[in-house]
Length: 374
Image (cartoon, rainbow, N blue to C red; front, side):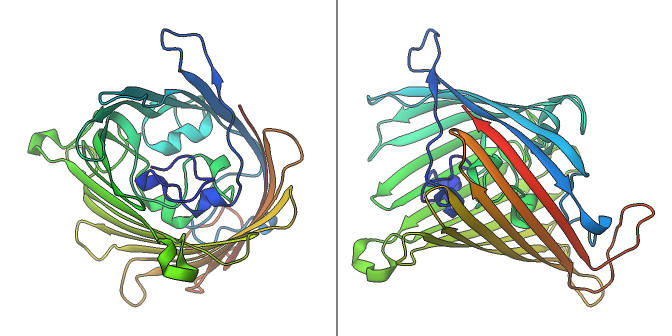
């Protein structure tokens, strides 16, 4: 799933992606007084400031969406109790987003864009089923099984999200089963109401559901220089919520690669989205690199290529470069400065621009983020 990505693996398979490896810092959690003594409280508060030199938007689908100025991004609040020991162990996870960014999850329950909004990011019951090595089940709202980046920006190497992330679902309402086949190999399969995150909504008139699956494979020591490499792959296929929701298929592959250099982390991700089996495909390729300059300072980069649509003159292409300086000056605080360049590879000077501003092939964003994790 798309959570807790500062350790190896992919969130989609319960093993975290390269995005997590970029910073090896555990999120603190605190016990709260409830009927379940193991309940832990955690979360974060994220703020940012944005400057867009030239005010250019080369392509609205590829550009950083926030306007200039200071922003409250989101307040994340999580209550959870992990699976305990025992054949029939249970647990739960509740995670809420409050603030303007909550609408981006697609399952807001109050408010509207850029207003006070509440979204249920996670709300599920975990069950252990004593089958084989141990089968786990999640029932309720859970993170999607595909993707290299987390919805939580503080768990990613960059503040802004990739194009691949933007075309993936964020969460589902349904049932997810997870199974560890052996050391280094695990899998997830599930069924959900809809492709997207809309709460309790599906194509009920047609009894159509969404199906999802993912695998995570870690290379063993016997593979020499490739030992520790992680391959994650997944697919989500189903209809968007609503009576006329389009059928969508998302195929994802992500790899984290060992470099032999402790300070350097590398990763690659690829997303392919097909809508209604038509020519409106979207492809997104991203390469990640993170280098730890010192105990406190890291440089994280992401280079992307995105293609939407097919046919000469009908496709839109963009190249995106993101550079992030992350400096851990204060305890429990994420403080970073990010530069994002979006280049219109069609040379058409943009499909959409800010009103009254000249069209350009390049868009620039400079963003600072300060977030506190508790």
